[in-house]
Length: 336
Image 1 (cartoon, one colour):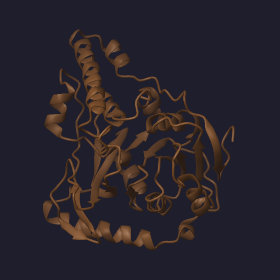
Image 2: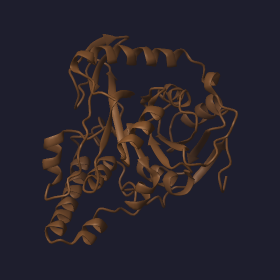
Image 3: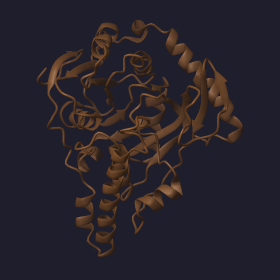
Image 4: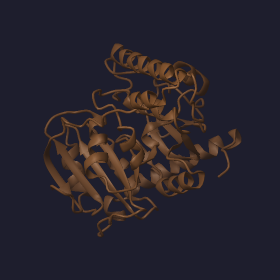
């Protein structure tokens, strides 16, 4: 699959806009499956944490359910929303047998949700992440899984189309390439990032490579997440970046050189809220903690103690606060 050249950027934007328009006009039932997913080597488990996602979740789920890849299961987990997110998903999408929807009894954050699904529910060999306010293009899973297999990688993301209203400036990516339908549009072209096994701290890595990936577009081997303890479930922000930095000590972080995912930027996202955004004290404090961990890993590697470095690189897959208040499942799940 060839790299996207700068001369093709505007065409990729226009193609992405057409994908979103087609999904908006699609009825939820247009791509319903009446057959439940069956565990097997080719099954992909899609994880969608959501909170107050009622404005976005229709387009998100349309993109997932319209995938050309025909063997996946979807876990949509509502983190105590204050809007109608859970009821809306059940009402509009509950007829699809590939979908399992959960409402939690207390708020736990997206990382405990991901850990819980990976550890307790997912039956796929591969885990696909999906943010509730973003949109997967219909060929995402097919193209991404094939590329991951060909490159013999264990984790990869995709290149990303970004759309956002006036007044928002993306942290990464090209400049504005198109203005259409009330949005500005740009691309984020993420590179293939080789493993950094030596004395390279996070700040150097971040400065050299920029943002490693769009976390919501990533596809992982489930065994990899189990092996490294998944996400830091003791926080509600920044744990996607933490996981990728830990993994990067031992393997490449790949990115499919094709736009397969549309990222919606908006003022209500966690990354832009004053208390949780990229410039917030809470996020700076968390990343400082992560940097201290990276320094410990570097010291262990410098002393040749790879066992300690690996231990420090592994989280505990914490999801102990998860409690389900209500569930609607289209397929058989143990305990529900």
